[in-house]
Image (cartoon, rainbow, N blue to C red):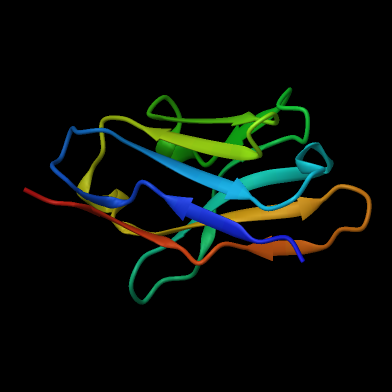
Length: 118
């Protein structure tokens, strides 16, 4: 069973930056498309950014375009989310998601809290 371990969350002031990491316990990381979701209190979880299994394609929700960058290092079994120019509305629990390209199996990380506040 693949497990995802997230790190990098915390408290940051508006305009600041954070980088989230998500490391997968699998030897075939390149068989998984990876994404980041977020969920604010009282709201539904939704997709923030996604990256293809080879890293060649990315997609972002409109509210983070130009501020967030998703990337992956398949040698380290890790996906990253670089978050710049953070805003209070970015405050949420961020979840790492892995989707197996061939089987469609989906795996979630435990989530990490991001709080943007002065």
